[in-house]
Length: 78
Image 1 (cartoon, rainbow, N blue to C red):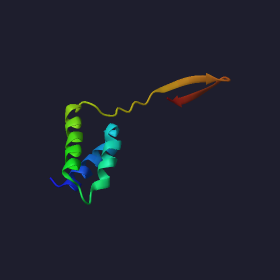
Image 2: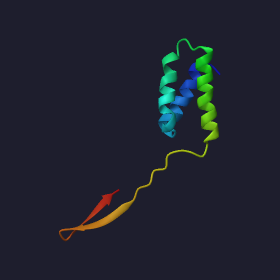
Image 3: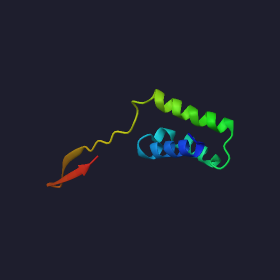
Image 4: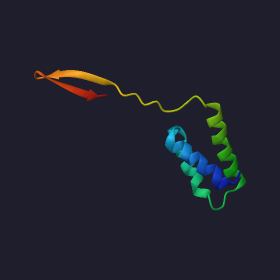
């Protein structure tokens, strides 16, 4: 898999569900045009991290609470 394709895949993953790898992936994007073996190893390190933490991700929960303020009910999103 070419370096740019691997980094592009990691970038997509970092913006969709794995924000914990965003900084590492953004550093990898700096070397798209001329990656070295060290950059490949770093990219594969991110892949190993993702594989080892496959159950991690974002969970969005919407909690609605009804409060009373001055006699009027308000619906709040927490």
